[in-house]
Image (cartoon, rainbow, N blue to C red; front, side, top):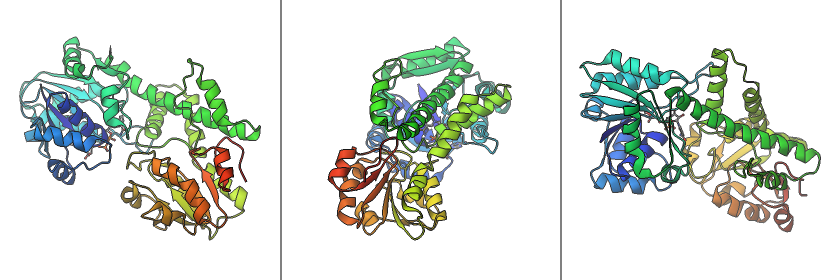
Length: 434
Ligand code: NAD
């Protein structure tokens, strides 16, 4: 099978690299020349553990190629994956501009019959429209089928997830097209669920909405636990032992962020509205999450009176550990609030600093080492539980701060550890330690 991937972002690049690793001939296409230049040199433009090694291996094996040219990239291909972004539009819906541009590219450049596979997360009905756009732009007389193949990888463990994921969903109206995509994916050895196109489109939104709901639910229980002196870690363990609930995704904290949950929950609310369905639950999930992102600043003001002139070390900027992705990270909201309160913000992240500089308020100062961020600060905020931050923040705060105080948005420590280090410790869903 000769495969092309349109879009070399977090999903497209990982998909391309993993498909080449299982033996396929893959050409990855992107309109961003800087990205393609780096990729052709074997350098990954994104931070994703294990990605660069696997990429280099498959470039050397001549199975993985990169180009900015749709003419070159789409020539003689049997299967074309679309993995471009579907960001949130102004009204909350998914902006499908990139999807339809990619579909036009396909129509204008294919040289034989193809199956077009949509990896991007797209609203109900989009795959059918993709086929219409491809057909409307066809120059020759080729047969075009579409398959919805939503992606479930998690940034930070994307390579692992591609080889060890829970399932591969293949949504198709034509059995023959589904069989081709099943054949391509068989070497991954993962369970394959074949559905209609509409069900596959819905599965992706429903999965993300459910996970977001789980997070907002545990955060609500955490906020209530604080008021009644229950401990959220104990509560989460207790409910997680029930296999109907499951023990994953029950970590209380300052809410979800990233490139998927925020935009996909908004998009599903919009899909509901467009179909005259009022999705009360999901609207509450979004609202709870928005409030949760401001929780640490609120707690700091309650405890310290004012943050005016206080030096705040903000540890962790990426929306989660092991990624450089800053999209919708809680750090954005926290930094904006801290700056508005008159605090001096010193930020540290092991990987995401360069991306953060384009997004956080210009008043934010960046530390190269975690030590530099904590040194001379009045307050420490933990926003991302990077391994380095968890290993060092408590100890360094006890060492370098005059009156050590940590506001921990990721519940990295046990109360007794903070007590031992004589650090005042305020976390989420647990009693404060003074
Ligand atoms: P991204 O923004 O990182 O990458 C998209 C890439 O597509 C960019 O490099 C862009 O230059 C390129 N592109 C846009 N139009 C193009 C065109 N016409 N031809 C060639 N290249 C083009 O996006 P992402 O994070 O990889 O997400 C892609 C899709 O996958 C989205 O729909 C997203 O919701 C979904 N998804 C993302 C994740 C994730 O963890 N990032 C997980 C599951 C699903």
